Image 1 (cartoon, one colour):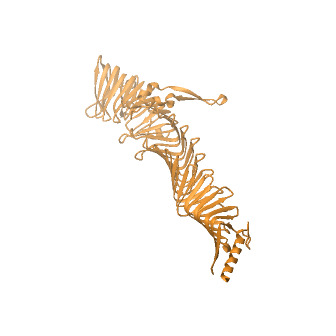
Image 2 (cartoon, rainbow, N blue to C red):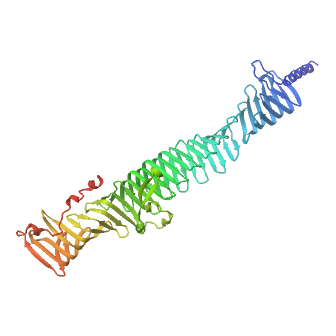
Image 3 (cartoon, rainbow, N blue to C red):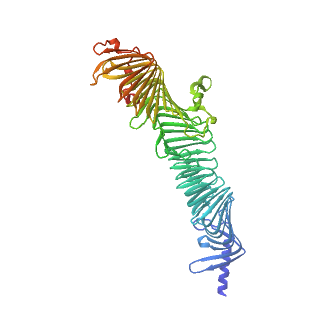
Amino acid sequence: MKRYILSLLLLVSAWSCFSQAVSMDTAGLRMINITGDSLRGYKTESLSYQRIIGNVVITHEGTTMTCDSAHFYFDKNFVEAYSNVHISSSNRSSALSDYIQYTGNTNMAQMTGNVKIIDSTNTLYTEQLTYNLKTKVGKYYDGGTLQTDETTVSSNEGMYDGITKQAYFKKDVIITNPKYTIESKELTYNTANKVIKFLDESTINGESSTVRTKGGTYDSKNEKAVFTKRTSVENKDQTITGNTLNYDEKSGAGNATGDVVIVDMKNNSTMTAKVVEYNKLTGYGKATTNVVILQEGGKTILNADEAEYNKKTGYAKAFGNVSITDTAEKSTLFCGVAEFNENSKFMLSTVNPKLITVADKDSTFMRADTMMSIRVIDAKNLKRIEVVTGEKKNKVTKVMYNLLMADSTYRSDKADEPKLIIANHGVKIFADSMQAVCDSLSYSQMDSTFRLFKSPVLWSKTRQSVADTIFIHTVRNKVSEVNLRVSAFLLSETGYRNMYDQLSGNFIDAYFTANEINLVKVDQNAESLYYAKDDKGAFIGVNKSESAKMNVYFVAKELDHISMLEDPKGVVYPIDKISDSDRFLSAFKLYTERKPKSKLTIMGE
């Protein structure tokens, strides 16, 4: 009877506590309220609790929890909820699980089994979760998944803040979305503004590109990316890597800074620079500071302080300390500005352009005011045009070449089409075996011939050649033939002052073997003057001749004999009887002051 009365008193006491709307303990903490279909109290030496079964409703500080059964530890303000546990809050968020341990003093819930946190359109799934019902912060350490709209995020460890909508994920993080997938070691994701922040190694696989980064943010709502640690972006044609990368999908604008490397798989080339800007919509790109482009194999093909390129128009421009190397032709161009069109393959170099061509041990150095490279088939289409930019008072008129603005109709699928190199104004050439000056020059890869126009002068060791036009034919970068056209004059030094072997005529053709002259043909009004020698090599006189045509033969670099053809005339002056007037042909003139003295006179100017 005493045991029955004691049990009844405990039951009444417990029920009195459950019926209170809000109760406070001695420390002023709000107590948990709980009701159910049936209640039974338990007490041992170490603890006491009540077991509530059926339609259990637990309320605490604006949060309501329902379950099939619960244990309530009144003295600890602590509840264990079993089976079909459902938590609903005033902010319309809810949580479900198989089992919950909830501490009212800290608002912390330990949720286990089929855990689900539902917050508007966001749902977090896991098997174990530590959840603060007051701050709405949930944490898991053994795998979980967040589903929000079309985006799913899973990881080994994670945290979700239902108030700020900020989620944190760590270890084997995977994000899937119809537009992209992400694999990461650590990141945060805000379900409200859709901003992803990368905190460790991450890979973003998009529809047409792959991004690898260690830090930065991606605003998936506004499609903006800001990567603050070394990052690479790869598509089927190229890879760009930089210390920082920014990209705006809607505007198409992006930039990379800090040791930028762009690998072009399509063209087998690599570009490095400090800063690169690019707009996908307009096709315009710009690289600045120490711009270097390498071809496959690591050979440099372009250096510049700054370069810009428009993928849609095919127009490119490089500025400041520009050097362009043609590995096939073994040549390097240096200039202040180089412009290029991808469609027409036309290139214009200005601001002190200089060209170095390597041939065995004898390199050729050339300079001019402007230099051009053009496909031979396009040469007839080249025109200078005026381009007007700006409006009203800000109008600027610029003279350009039409092929710099060539469209895709100029494109050709043929590889290595022969080109024409053109140099204009103030042309100077220096090589150990040859020097030349002229107003303009062209070189055709089709026939390996240099053409010198307007007051050209050519020096070859001890010889000087002058004509209205000079053609220099080469075979494997060695001179094979030189044509002097109109008012042609050729002289050779004898080694003595005012003593020169001379040839003049309307046309002169000189032929070479292994870069050494062996035959000269003079046509129309041929004249010759040469110093004859005896068997010991001493000068014995001057032989002065003229005819319609003549052939001059050389042996071991020395004039051997002359064959005069058609109406020959000649006279010989003894060496001690020759006058100053008889020492020179009428066309004689030295151009020593115009002769480039060394490669420094080419490269140093």
